Each structure stands twice: as structure tokens, then as C-alpha cells.
Length: 422
Image (cartoon, rainbow, N blue to C red; front, side):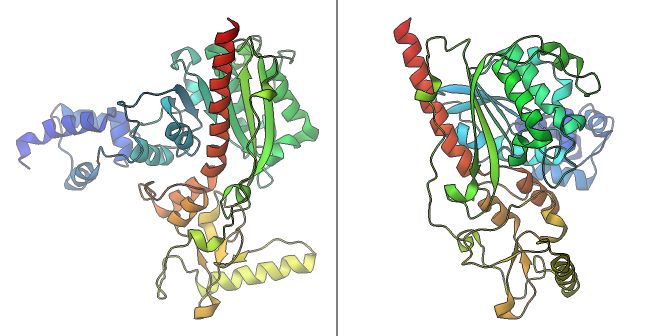
């Protein structure tokens, strides 16, 4: 490439990718000053290094799940706490258009962009609700660490637990017709069920509108509590293994319909019910790749394997069931994969004793398959460890797909009823 053309190339490449200067800097793995550096490239003050230029040339505007603007969309939605788009994909494939997404983790943003061609907005607490586009459905798999068994279970006293109030303020401002929220099963029982009761009361509009001052939520979110919501809601705990995924992964799903919009619906339970388990006959072997017998990338070392066995024995002596879990191709399912999977793979190791080797970890592609992502989904936009975190934090697409079909069917029925009664 001629040196004189580099400045113009950078500018044109960024426009082709459809990203801002800051987003391009993040895609190139640059730090805080990255946006300023990209700007200096485009105005000719500096030139990118050969390494940066090569990375830039490798970036592509080809995205396997980019919204096709030529297709007519039957509804719009937003994707909050988007992660890598696990909730988005089924709704998009079932006829929806994503008009806004938000995700704070820049590694997840990179994977999201690689697959969808949309670079998510950042920290949702810094985005005013009025600036978010109007939409029919709000989707949010909001942070679960504050309520999970593995976390400290601080709930609303953990900043991650207060993200529910960011959802509430957006619902109050934008009044979408429906929503789908996802979280860990333990959310229901957290703090003697008080947390979940508070959330559902707020969604239904039966809450008193005040939250203790020591709970750290934004001023906009606190003020929005005075704007009463009016949603009919239903919720259910569903297991990924019941919907064609060989993984024991239970999550709570909360669905809401806006009674202020659907004023003619007398009983929402007549038009919406959660999907019944598909009960497909699956096994772990269905998601496994063929790994070479001389593999050293995913096979854990003898030292780590000895440590796993030692810790499990210690737990057994204490009378608890903690420790590594071993599976093979005939196992009906694995344990729930989590964001910590990259550390040692202990929750789901694949047995390799038949070839005389220690167990191996799942590959990122196998983790993606375990969560129901199609093989066209790009898993290597980030490092292997980051990919493990992302799929451990994501949702089972097969469950969300089943829910989305039920929601869309109910939405279409509700619109017909609304029109007939008007």
C-alpha cells in the first residue's frame, strides 16, 4: 500500500466497518488513548504501525448475523446487557429488528460486532432513556452475579444487582409493548424472596415507588420509580436440557405485556404460555469436536489433574459434592458452564482415560454449541479465555428461541384482538 494513501485508507476502512473512531480503536485492541490515535491517523498527524495496519486490514465488514435491511421486520427490539447477543439472535431470526444494544465489556462488544455488525453502546447507566430508540420489545439478561449461588449474593447492595432499576427506568420512559428478562434461578429465593417480590411489584405497578437511599441506583432510575409501570407478567424456571441442549442450566425467564397498550386483552394467560419442554434426545457427544490425540491446547496438565483429584477427595471427606465433574460423549448433559470455566474447566471436563490422557476442557466452539449457538457464529474474535467467559455468561439460545416464538405469536394475537375491539 502506498504510504500517501494510508490516511485515506484508515478513514474509508472505518466508514466501511460502520464504527466510530473509539470503536475502531477498541477493535484494534488499543487502550484509553486509542480514539485520539485513530483521529491522528485520519488527519495525517501520525501513521499506524505495520502491526496496527495489518490488524486493520484483517477487520471485515462481513458479519454472519447482520440484520438484512431488505427484509420486512414485524417488530423492533432492544438488547440490554447484551453480552454476545445470545438473547438477540432468536428474536432477530424470528422476524425482529434490533434498533439498539448496550454492553459494557469491550471484549463482548468485539464478539458482538463481529457477528452482528452492530457495535453496542457502552455503560447503560450513562445513557439517558429518552435517547434510546422506540421499540416493541425490551430484552435484557441483566447481571446475575449479585443473586447467584457462586457470587456473594448481595442483591440490590451489589452494583450489578441494581441494574434491574436501569431496565425499570427504560420501561417507564419508552413503554415497550413487551419485555423478556433473564437471570439465575436463585433470583426467586434471594433475601427470603424479598428481592424478587420487589422486582415483580415494580413491573406490575403495585410497588410504593420508594427504594432505600443506601441502595446505589442512579438519580434517573430513582426518579423513574414514581412513574408507575403496568405490565402483566409471568415467569418460569426453564432448563436448557429440556430444550435440546446437553447442559443442566436452569434460568428464570420473566415475560411482560404492557397493559397500557393492550387495553383490550382481558386475560393475557389465554394468549401467552411458556413453551413446554421439547424433550429432545441429546447427549454430550452431539456437541463435541474431533480433538487430536496429541492435543495440548485443551487437555489439562498432569499437575492440574492431580490438583483436581486431590481437592475432590478433600471435599468428599468433608461430606460435600464439590470438585471437578467428568463427562463423556454418552453423558446426557454437562453441568452449567460458567464465566470461570477458563480457569480450569472443573465444572465440565471431558474424559480421555480411554486414550490414557488426563481430561480435556471443552473448546470454545463446543461451549458455543452447548449454548445453542449455530456453527456460523464467530467464536474467535477474542482470546480463548475471553470466549470461555462470554459463553459462560451467555444464555441457552434454544430456550430463548422457544420463548420468542411464544411471545411473537401472543403479540400477533394481541394486535388482532386490539384491532377487532377498537
